[in-house]
Length: 78
Image (cartoon, rainbow, N blue to C red):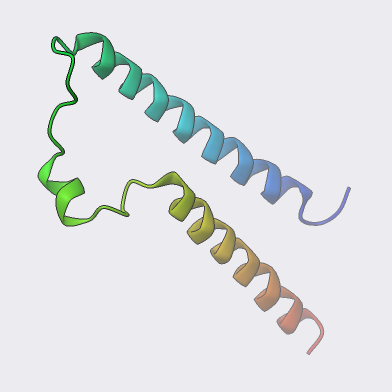
């Protein structure tokens, strides 16, 4: 196993857990919905439409993770 196996496993488990909890929360809200139409967006989503986008969060987390790896190797082989 490489040096980055455990941190990568941790990040994958963390993203999976957050996604699973978020999916359950959305499913619970769908079950409580009474009409055939979607409810209006919250003010937070209207003001920041990219904030709750999971793809953008994956890019941000992977960018931070790659930055840590790059900085680690720069400092290691200096």
